[in-house]
Length: 208
Image 1: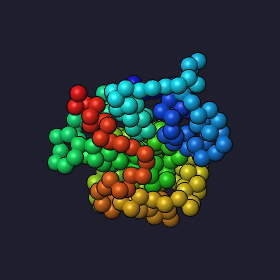
Image 2: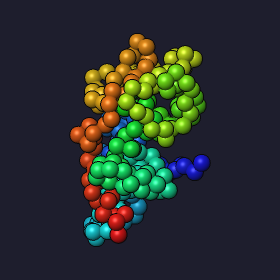
Image 3: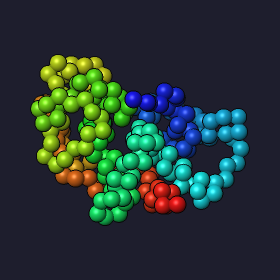
Image 4: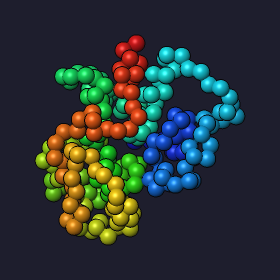
C-alpha cells in the first residue's frame, strides 16, 4: 500500500500548526513549529495569501495529514460520511476518530497515529480477543482493544503508556492499564474532538 515517506515535521510546518505526528517530540522544544513557524521551502518566509479555494484545500490537507490518510482514502471516507444521516463534516470526523489506529493512539498505546498503524500491522493488538492487523477498521461501542500477551513488554508500548500519565482520555474511551486493555464506551461526538478543525471548509471543498 502507498504511504508517505517524507518528513513529518515538514507537514506540520506546511499547515502552520502542530499535527502531532512525532509523538513526544511535538511536546518539546525540538518541535519544528516552535523552531521555524513558517512554511518550508525557499519562499516559506514570504507573505502567503490564499484564495477561498486555497483555505479549503489547506484545511483538507491538514486533517488528512493529521489522521495519516492518503488522498484516495480520505476522499472515499468523505463520500461515505456524506451518504450518512446528519452533517457530512461531523460524520467525517466521527469516521476518522473511530479508525483503529486512532483509537490505539487515543488510548495511549502509541505516541502517534503513525506509530499506532505500524504496531497494528505488526500484529500487537487484538479487537474483541481476536488478532487485528487492519488500521482502518472502524470500532463500535462495546468493543475491546487489547495487547497480545507477547506484546505487553514491548518497549515502545510501555513507554507510550507511561507517557500517558497526566493526560486525559476522550470521554468515549476508557482504559484498564493493569489488563493492558481499552474499550469503546460510546460513539464519539463532535465535542470530543478538541483539535483546531473546521470541517465545514472540507465540505465546501468537495461540494465544488
